[in-house]
Length: 262
Figure 1 (cartoon, rainbow, N blue to C red):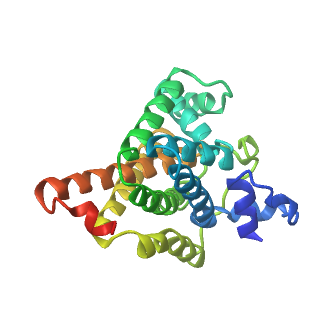
Figure 2 (cartoon, rainbow, N blue to C red):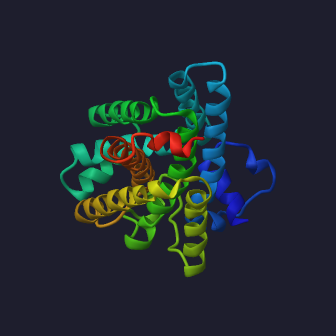
């Protein structure tokens, strides 16, 4: 039931038609966020792969990005925009929370989204198709696991009745933590070449920096913070992979890409 609740909340696919899920299960959906990443990542990769058969990879990558936006209903991107607005325009906890709750997007949010999508597009557009597919599915799942840990380290920054989703997540049990880790790490074991495994550190470092920022400014987290943390962790995963790739090509094996794409 909790898995179904996670799919209902984190995607806009009609899982709600399968069975009505009681509200109490939505408090424990975050551990299954990486599992939802299997679904969103697979659909994104599927669109990318199919589109790339008839279109340039750069156009296929844009279509793949759009497909994930449709699947998730821009849930995380909305959080990222609010996060930039709140932390860019606010100086106190109260002011930051008020800005983040405002439904209107501000200049920090607009600029933040533009820079985010530019980086998301440019980081992967020139890579081989097979490598992009691998990075997308692995980055989606692993970054969602890293971002999900925010609920274990910080309290919710608002009162529950002030939550946008009218729901405050419960902290994970060790069984849920293990489930989330397996769902986040398994794609890396299955698909990512071992020489790329060091990029897993990038989302961890990004999470640590964002955790410290939220703790100092809000003494907690919000739903917007969760979405922003995921997207920024994922972006750092792609950036780390690109840096590692070019480091191998320039200072190590010039045929590094070809070795893993045969």
